[in-house]
Length: 345
Image (tube, rainbow, N blue to C red; front, side):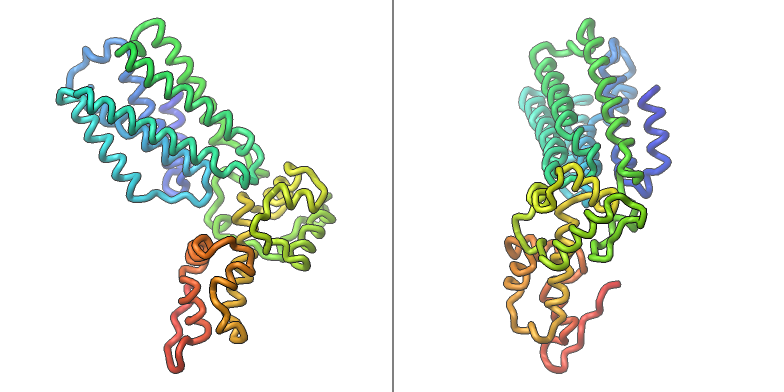
């Protein structure tokens, strides 16, 4: 009942909020798992067992998607998520209607653990650049709790098949699952300096500029001014290895205070995105400058602070909708007489 109530709550925002959408999907799969792991589930009519099993079959992929949406602000579903979902559905059909073999069972467990690891990778990968302090603190605990539960569940099912549906294992399984659900609810409702866990479209599309400023009455005005001097005057963003740690040392403040400053006062949720905004603004200006028309794009990228051309090209395309070469041609006209490309709004 707790899960169903949570699903209904999340479904209200599912259309415009990817975290709500994938979380509702994940919790629906967990509902199916709870029903399927209940004692005497095998005595139900095959049609009901088949339906419940199919609903829960894609839960590992739903977990992977949900972790990406919660812990990676720019997360987008890809084709391989759909492919993985289809594979789990096919295995689910085989397990319910056919005769699962040792090979299919081993494949299922291996894919489940792979989805688990990919989800945990989303949880841990962005910890160093996460500016949402509450979410950042919970990353490690969340990853450890989920990993332990899943590994123990898979291992116990291999060692004692069906043990999770009989006492005393069913009680322990129910207690552990309830704990994870409450932890999941805590992460999903984390406040972020008065902002929701998932930024609105306007917040997500916001580009950092040197005009960002805190309210006049803020106690951090002096600190914001010091940060602006480092950015506007010293061009500190040009350092390829710039991190929260190194910037906090330059400002002589604790890291947590710098995160709170950039997140709470300037509205940015990820340090890399915050810094790259300035780097991309400088690169755009250079690519529009007729005086730098002969400067190689690699030189512009490195001068702006990018460590290599690959990340620069990806970030630039995501930021402007054009490759650096297309952007330069659109503004400088390319060859004589060439029609400039339209600039996306």
